[in-house]
Image 1 (cartoon, rainbow, N blue to C red):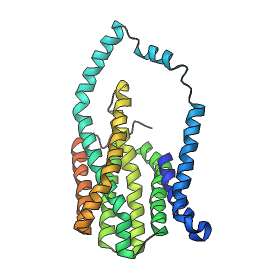
Image 2 (cartoon, rainbow, N blue to C red):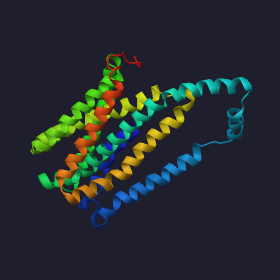
Image 3 (tube, rainbow, N blue to C red):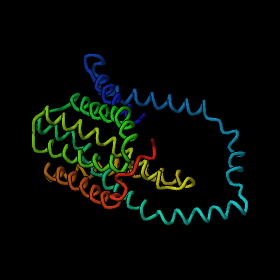
Image 4 (spheres, rainbow, N blue to C red):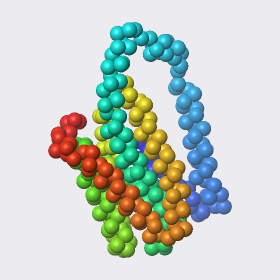
Length: 272
């Protein structure tokens, strides 16, 4: 949620700070100056509020174990081992999907520039719009859907809707239609990301939650880093390569997810 809010307000603030009529010749520097100031403020808050006087005590408690706990851990590890194959496939689906999503997201400014001569502040509004739809779907729509349908079913339909959104975006090159299809894509993005993270969490034992969810975050960060590189390379080959990559790399995880979840599609949600 905090990330989504940042993506909504960040572009809007950046557009406002870069107005030459307000800040004159240093307008192009203002986003960097404000960002540096915010980072220093965060450092101060971390220094002021973080208290580690109980760290040694907590560490000692966390490392304490007895023979009974060891036996229980062995039994639990057998359960985790049986679920490794399923979690592995969920991670494959999540990784491929995140790559497709980030390639498309990073190519958006170029696509809108080539198709509609969009530039400058237009891209800021574009990013803010995408993040706003994503956040609204996450806050208001997803909780209601998860009360009535399984996470597997929500994810499957979100994949299908997103692919349809891509086809509309690609084959109807009108600006208003592009904004509409982008809203559809953003809405489905929120459903897929949260549902996949929840599905992976539900398939993981309690003692492995931190490790596994850390991997989920690492995959997302990796996609953020690799996505722009792939998008840049494909753009040099031609825009059609961006479209082909995004559609194919969204279709592949859809097929895999269907295969591994088809027996669970009609199960009630665990998060009623």
